[in-house]
Length: 406
Image 1 (cartoon, helix red, strand yellow):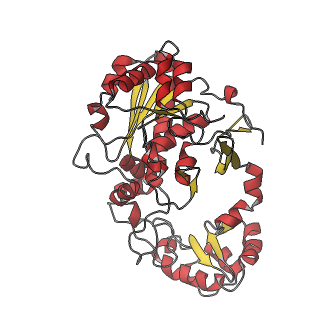
Image 2 (cartoon, rainbow, N blue to C red):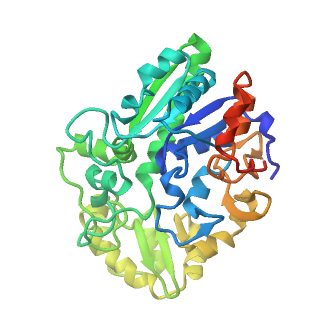
Image 3 (cartoon, rainbow, N blue to C red):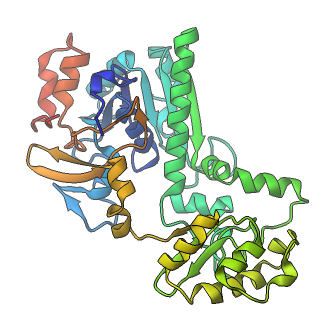
């Protein structure tokens, strides 16, 4: 697919100061960078974003963890010591020129440093200020660590995944971080539109906990309106606590088959040559009431044929079903190639890294960038020169690493 040039992207010219670390805040700024914003990571000298090295991935690329590369591509790095008055003065000058600031410190930390929303608004009333906390800025959980697994655990999500006899089961991804970052990016974009209408900045706030509650809004709404009955995970092939048979994953003769919706249980049984389910035909309530009994019969039949055979039978009959792919199979698929999801980015002209593009396409064009995650402090001189040209040139001496190539 054709790549949209940077200067044609909707946020070209927008300046984002990103004080955040780890995943949630940097995920929000990554989405803004893909849309054309100039994202400047503000990092501690000599240390930087802790995710450069703290995560437990064993894949190191050019001195930084692969997860740091994934979440911080297409950004610049400026080192600044918040305890150093010269650096603090530099940051205040940048804030005056910026459109957006993002931070995800624990509540109270950024305020004690003098860069909370009220202080920043005094410098730049038009700024859109984005904050992510773990569990909100007030209340009994305010000071608890805002970490993904802990947010999943406290949100009730772990009791929706898996089958009835399974222990609480976290998702295999940092969903609290990612959804909080996505929510913040959405709020920032809305606030920028609002600023264009009325000229005022805004403070956009969310938390990992709020993101996890929103993630469950569909089933939680049901819970709030059905007498608050607890959800019941199925004992057989559990896939969704609020959906009945045949919804689930079934082992086939050579793999797995995902079964979702079907015109009727009778039609599914006919196609799969199943006997013994006749008493449930036409009884919609049975799909939930007798979910485990029905699914156990379907599971026995599914194991008799290959996944490809089942797809050939079921898909033409409007049975919603799919093969279950692992990553090698996904990457070999026609859909992967057709959507042009992968990109190659380079750092310092030598290190090559395979990465994913953002999920948005604009006017038929994808939003790729060859720029990798920045070397710590590599862009300080360029940032000062571009945004604070009235500052004395001596400021550039703190970081002497060459600027990363675009």
